[in-house]
Image 1 (cartoon, rainbow, N blue to C red):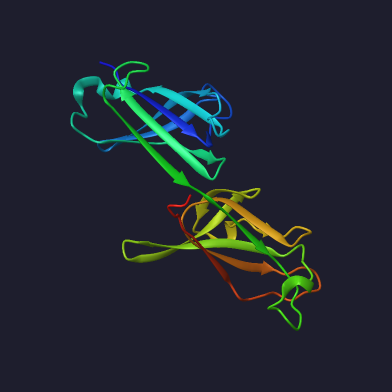
Image 2: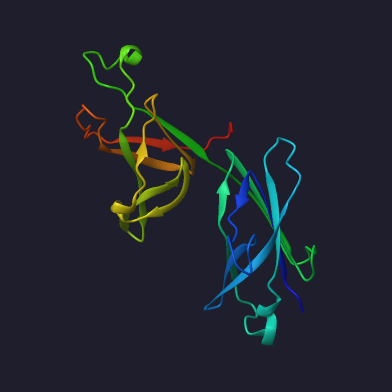
Length: 224
């Protein structure tokens, strides 16, 4: 008996192992029954999609979970990490009893991501008209969202690589500081639907800290 999973992502790239025996492969965390196992998939760079989005796939052999029929009729959850490279990301997965086989089933999904741009201005006598306000570099912000889970409100702070969202942390001290550039701009991409709060934590030299937190709500619409 064999059990293969093939995954294709369009508009994103898999996070792969950087060194060692599985260098260049995608690491899969597989939860089956009460057990958690690690597998690896070989990544292939596919031809770009018709709209130019990057496209990759991997195939992994999960046949060892069939040994002894220990997990018969139990759910299997497979997770991996990927970096969003476009506003629209498509994902297709197939499962079968041989490489390239789809007889066990398949599924497709699409998700959309957003980029938020915040502009930092110096205050003047008429802040309703920002055309003559100076744009400020060097302001530092952290970004967070509030998540309702099991009746408890949890705050997760954004951790970014450059301006690309990569992870969340509950430790405010570990939040990445996003710094406004010479045009006063702070940009954060790879975000899903939700409300994001910008908190200024360091003012530019010669200016006072703005204690008013700003929120941006990201929604998906049928127009996308």
